[in-house]
Length: 238
Image (cartoon, rainbow, N blue to C red; front, side, top):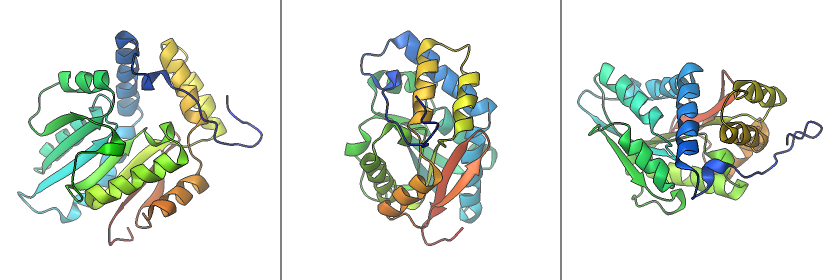
């Protein structure tokens, strides 16, 4: 599955993407993702960038965020908890193409600050600059290169201020890491995890796709657990 010699991106099929995925398998997979995001600090790394963005947020100012391919919306909910603890008026729209995933996200809790929308990220029902920030996590690797560029351009178009895009780095150690982490998980999780790493991006690819999308303001950051975050605000070199 992983090209150990050339370290090339190898596209593959993930069960999580199937329209007729088994609901029980999907819930196990989403539960695993929620746990990993929390335990390994992946959600906290995203919030750390939002915290950096928030230095110029004004009191009582409403901040709107869109999360593309939100999954079970665990990251938006964590963002809302952080926002509430800091007296920020944040509202999040979580978007997912998969009907069952969107229903699962909506069923996990009712928060008026969180809206779940079932929609295709390539046909989003939102006007330009409808949000302050656009984010996505663990989604880009599902796409071909032209799809990644298209999504990054959409994030730039939707966001007035900036973007945050997080995913796994394609590294040999990441492949071994994910094999160990998922050793006792469900068949679907074990399969999708290794496929994910094989089709993830390496640093030069991330930067090239960023530049093709015209997001020169977004800087590449590395985080614990073989994760990268492409983040930045428009008009800022931070």
